Image 1 (spheres, rainbow, N blue to C red):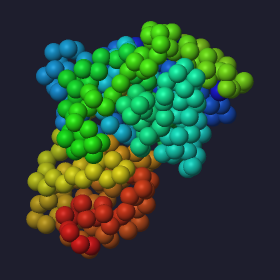
Image 2 (image 1 turned 120 degrees about the horizontal axis):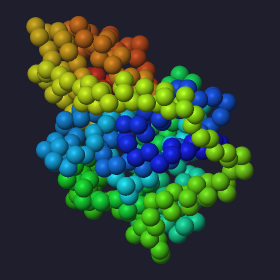
Image 3 (image 1 turned 60 degrees about the vertical axis):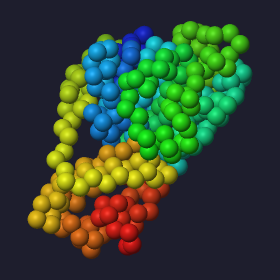
Length: 334
């Protein structure tokens, strides 16, 4: 395991560019660990509709950064009280959506610190039933990363102010509010820590369990590549926000794998445009499905025929194809 020193960078656009750069350009023979802390920012999941996830006026007023990541899942709020970790490894089908594998080392260290942390649900680390960490994944052909937040001393009130939290998500969790089901790790520690102290304790704990750790300092050439990626992708409005599609049919449903939100524009009985949003996790880009269904007749037989060669588990996780077809067409029985 190689620890990458990000040299104290707190710019979220640069940190996410660094994470992707490591995934796509570093030696495939090694596994990497990256820690970073971001300035106040909202990090949007790959498949989400940004303008519907944020409180736009508040974000503008407070100059909160908004940046889209390449992994799936939901929108999260970052600030200086939140430590982010990322494990970059070889892609393995058994590792995809296996959050236990990547969170277990972190949970073990938290437990030794006295935090009653455990993995619960799809991708959350909780303590006494309250969320202290959310996790997401991304995979390319050969490599993948699993990354997550660690809420140490974050301003939890800002989470609800900055994000438009959907009622479906609140209801699916069985809680009255987002604020009531999240917690800071400092609440479970005898002595409260600063982020830098916490970072050292987590890293020391991970070192303790792995004898083959080493630290890597990025070269000037590395940083040049990271800045180039930031400028060409993460700084761009089209990447972070994108254009809202024209639609006349809106269908949404929360599945065990997350919410799927469809915007469909049908004209003269044909799907002219389709956009798939949601906080699901998948390996393949949903743009493949969108492009395939565009130009298809808006009828059940044509939709089923267009999707027949798709393994939807690669796009959404463990989902029944009939349920997805039902969501597109709005049929009660298929």
